[in-house]
Image 1: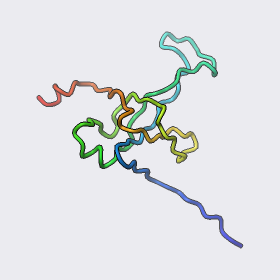
Image 2: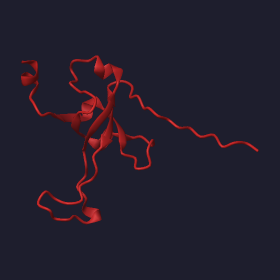
Image 3: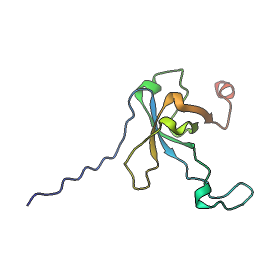
Image 4: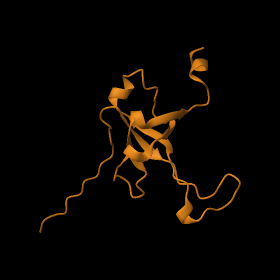
Length: 110
């Protein structure tokens, strides 16, 4: 009797100018506390960077770091079938449109 082969991956490394992002949960209510129906969920385009590719790590033009909260354009995001809730996406660095920081980069250099 043949054994079923199971592939269990523990790590995903993006290649090229890409990042691996864990997408934030979709919004269920507005900031004012109004509950939204399931069909009217606000599309989520924010998330946290899980890991970055070596190309980005060595490129000063992309100020992205692991665990940064980002705003990204979801059109070219590739879902990674790695977890049951499927919240991981490989996102091209050019589709990252903003990074949320507590301090401006100028204040970090001082």
